[in-house]
Length: 247
Ligand SMILES: Nc1ncnc2c1ncn2[C@@H]1O[C@H](COP(=O)(O)OP(=O)(O)O)[C@@H](O)[C@H]1O
Ligand SMILES: [Mg+2]
Image (tube, rainbow, N blue to C red; front, top):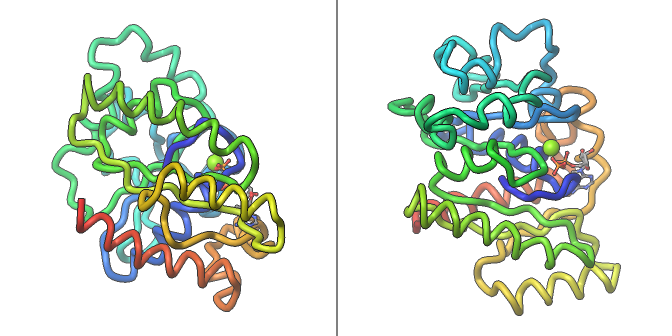
């Protein structure tokens, strides 16, 4: 999940999508965002509970398996701590700095790994793009959403040319959608004009239950299984599986 903008659903999407997928697949959540309200927080984990975090794993001092928190029978999390905020600087001049995550994941047996990226296109996001098979770009249905996409695409192109030729665009996901607002409908049709079939058919509607769930450390399926948010993320899980099989 990548987008240099904050507040677009980068964290909400892997959380709820991963929950739905973990009913049938082995899923790994990877949190690469040091900031508050990251995936680690949304899953209800406290800093004191963590044995080790993404920083130590990227640094090479701790194995992935020793940092993982088990959230469910088929759901694991590599958590992020506040120390990840200094990773960009700490790893900046290290040889192989774009390969740290890829190396840590080598040979691990998961069907799907969902990476929550920080709101920037720096070294951590480049590590994610280098380790990934595909990128899902959540965009909020607002005026500047379209402008930001060119910048992510440029970064993706740089990664494809220099590091990971197999990287694919899985799709652009419209979030916070409210069909009663003409601006939202305009953004949706602007996206469709420019990106065509690369836009997910599923739209995540604006739904307050999605905003409330993480403060209980719950996904939407635990918090309000009958909400719009649960229905939308359920639909996304189906479409996501179809798309990754076709890539
Ligand atoms: N579809 C939605 N409807 C309403 N609130 C949402 C929705 N998706 C996310 N939120 C809330 O909006 C805020 C930003 O979402 P988040 O996933 O944290 O974005 P990002 O990780 O891109 O910064 C969070 O408080 C989240 O709970
Ligand atoms: Mg986030």
